[in-house]
Length: 315
Length: 179
Ligand code: SF4
Ligand code: SF4
Image (tube, chains in turn orange, brown):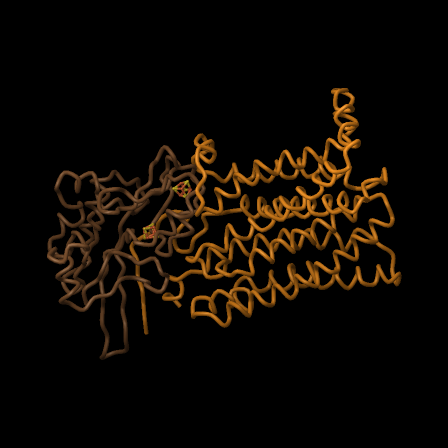
C-alpha cells in the first residue's frame, strides 16, 4: 500500500492540474486549421491552380486572417498577466516553444496577407484602389507568385508543427510527452482544413481533390493516433497510465466516440463513398471532421494536464 | 558559484507545518495558496509500515523545464546559488511553467504572475536562512551549498541514506530527504 496525503490545495493545481481551460484548445485548433489552410492555399498557388479565377486560394486568406486572429485573441484571454503581453516580443527564447510560436505568428500574418493581395477581397479593394496596382504588380511576376505559394506552405507547416510541439516538449505531462504529437496536430490541422475548404470551394474539380486529400489525411490520422498510443504504452509506468486515460480511463468515452468514431472513421467512410460516386457530397462529413478536430484538442489538453508523475503515486 | 540546496530529515520531521506558516508570513503568500506544503507518505502493509513526512516546495532543479519553456525569460536561474526565480514584471501569466513542473510547485499569484518558493533569496543574500529552515522546531531542515563538499548539506547527503523526489522526471531536483 502507498498512501499520500498533502496539505496543499493551490487553485488550478490541486487535486489535478487545470491551468488551461477552453482557450488553449481553441487556440491550438484554430492554429492547426489555419496552418492547414495555408498549406492548401500555398499548394494551389504552387501548382498553378490560381490561374483559375474561381480558385479557392483567393477566398482562403481572409478566412485565415479572421480565424488566426480569433485564435490569438483566445490565447490572449488565457493570459493571467495580460498587460505584460508585449514581453513576448522583447526577447526570443530558443528553448521555449511558446516563444517560437509568438514569432512564427508574426511571420504568418504577412505571408497570408501576400496571398490575399493576389486578389484583395472586394470590400477592401473598393476602399483602397491602390491595391489593384499591387495585384497587377504581383501577377506580372510569376516567380513572386511561386514564392508566395512556397512561403505559405512553409509557414503553414511551421505553425501546424508548433501547435503540437508546444505540448510535446513538456516532460512533466506524460500524455503530451510524445514525438508523435506534432505529427498528429499537423495531420489533424490538414484534415480539418481540407474539410472546411471542401465546403467553401466553388470549383467542382477542387472539391473533389480536397475530398480525396481529406480521406488521405484521415487515414494517416488513424495511424498516427495508433502510434501515439502504442508509443506511450511501451514506455514507462506514468506513460502507460497516461495512455490508459484515453484507452479506458475518464477520457475514453469522449475520445472513442467523438474523436475516433465521429471525427475520423465515420466521415472517412462517408467521404470514401462520396468520392466513389456511391453517395452525394454533403457537408455532414466535413462538419464531423472539423468538430472532431476541435474535440481532439480539448481532450489532449485536458487529459494531458491530468496525466502526471504525482498521480502515478496516488493510484 | 554556489549551488544552493536543502536536506530535510524525515526522521525528525513531525509535520507541525511551522515551515508552511513561516513561509506564508515571510513571503506574504496570498490566502489559499502555498509555496511549501506537507506531504505524508504511508508505505507498506501492517505490521511492516513506514511513514514519511516531507516538507515540500520548489526543488530549484538543476535541469529546469520551467525556465526552458518560459517565453519571456521571466522564469530564470538567479546568479546567487542557482536559485530559480520569477521576475514578476516580465511574466505574462501564460502558465507554461506551471504545466512544465513535474512537482506542481508553482501557482498563479492573484496579481497574475507565476509564483513559487524563492529559497527566501532576499534573506539568504543577507546571510540569513530561509524562513522555513530557521523556524523548524525539530531542526530537521538544512540549507547550504551542494557544491561545497564541507557544507552541512553535502556531508549529510554523503553520510545518510537519502532520496530526492521524482528523480525519474529528469529535472535533477536539489532537495534531498534523509530516511
Ligand atoms: S521544482 Fe518545478 S518550478 Fe521548481 S525548479 Fe524544478 S521544475 Fe522548476
Ligand atoms: S507564466 Fe510567466 S514565468 Fe511562467 S512561463 Fe509564462 S511568462 Fe514565464
